[in-house]
Image (cartoon, rainbow over all chains, first blue to last red; front, top):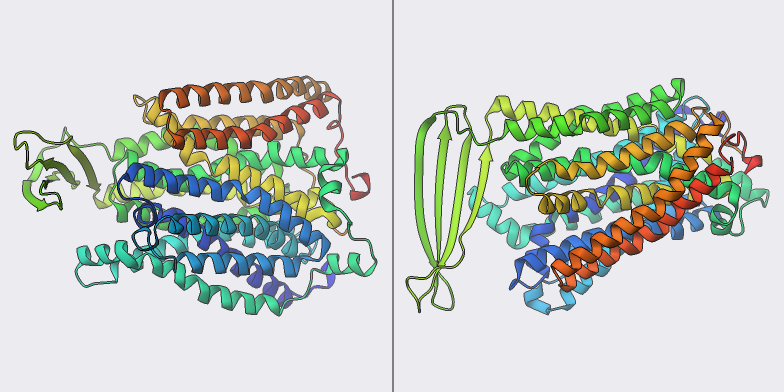
Length: 511
Length: 79
């Protein structure tokens, strides 16, 4: 039983569960992080916008199938056990990720390429839907009373660490394929992007080996030996009013707000730095990496603290801070990276123009202007247009892109702001596994907690970058307009949580 | 407090269909503005996914209104 589980064994349980979950998150995120490269490889190049949208749709599809994965694997986990179910999800996720790295490009096999990628992406989403509930339940059912928040918080670190590892692997691969940085990036875009996908199989093999040596959850094993497991977990979870009302409370009073805070603090922050602030690719990613590194220990801090003061107010406190400070914090990021028109130029500017012949005889003209400002900001503007062979005086529509590199002081200021955003994530996310586990009985715990978690995170959270970007295009005058989506969702969740969620810690999850 | 929980239940009950109406209106206007297959697929997915969630919010409001959350269960036997 939980009380008799030794400290060494508990460490093994946490290590084995967390490693596998971290790998699953890594697998899931590398696809999203490489969306632009994947679009150029697997979708028709004739229409880049359509290609990117297709990938975004694939990305969203990955999130939307997560709740289905929660139902499929949650049911399985309550019927046959936690251990084999989350072993299965790990194999499916690892296999799909590895296979994406092997799929030939659109130019090689035509439409079979995007179809294969879509199917594999759906499998990834399905597997992720089954993983988290299993890992959280497994650890919680081993944890002694009074330390459930602390132990499950280790599982909570894995989603953010998975993002951290995926960003790190992508950056390292991107810069290590050639001694010339530009050539290295070109090789990465051509074939090197496959490496982060292929590497996954090694990690999965190690994790499967470790998990195979683990025992079944003691609480589930006891239920099974007594013949008291559920015969129909889906019906008992969602068909019975008494349990359904707790599922709805978990969704609208906790996971819905937690999901949007999670995605705003990490994904939308990165997207905002890159697309609104126009920050350089490497800087926007390393800022996130540093912020994650500093903030991750707080998952465990807040998880452990919730064992003393209860889960509710820590989670709702994170939502309240998010609602109150998102606009000022994102506004500070925008002003810190604004074009420094009031500062004098330092090193002046340089311009370079080159033309590249196109297959049809036209020429692609590319003009690069670089500016150095006295405050240390370096700005590169690239303008491209097409010079038509038949009508020399006419040009295609100009395309302008601006990339900024900020000085050290501004860089660390941005790290500080993103750190605060991720600190909110640790508040809402650190205690939530223990909170969900304590809401439901052992025999239907896997199913009951997985669905609200994945609707909250996958649907409400996963669509945050998309809806926020959509709002920005609809109301372009306000660059912070995209934040209204997470602010409103978090506020509604805060109200519901405050009114209806209990702060009581369940002393016994054996029932 | 229980009274407040029940009154707020009416708000959640109403919020489900209102949110869905707003989403469908926005979807139709976006599709009309940009009648491409991509737009239709995206908004179709959004609306499809949010229909059961909106129903769930209304059911949640109904339970709150009926006083189901006045006292939460303290043991799995009560579930």
